Image 1 (tube, rainbow, N blue to C red):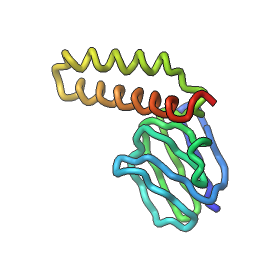
Image 2: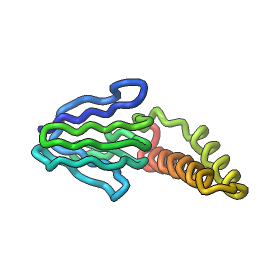
Image 3: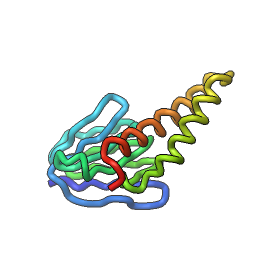
Image 4: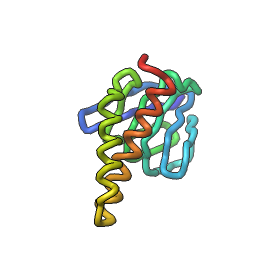
Length: 133
């Protein structure tokens, strides 16, 4: 068993011991078991799920992952159970980012809008895939 904690700026969202955890990272999805090697990597929007059960996963956005042989700490800007995601709000954020991208002038502005777009698109896809539980 490995201890997993998902922490947002609002506090501890999830804390439990599991057999395995799958995490969306900038390099792709990783699977972590007990006694995993030390690892620190960037988190990207997607689904964190436990023991191979995607339907019980937690949607996360950007942040960092710290893996030790005994514990996984996921520091994320936001974490949601799938049923907590508001598809209307996410669709609106996605549409606004798309419109603003058409007139974006600086690389910083483009990068920030791309992040907003990816976050909203990912959360919408998770709601579509797993429904409002």
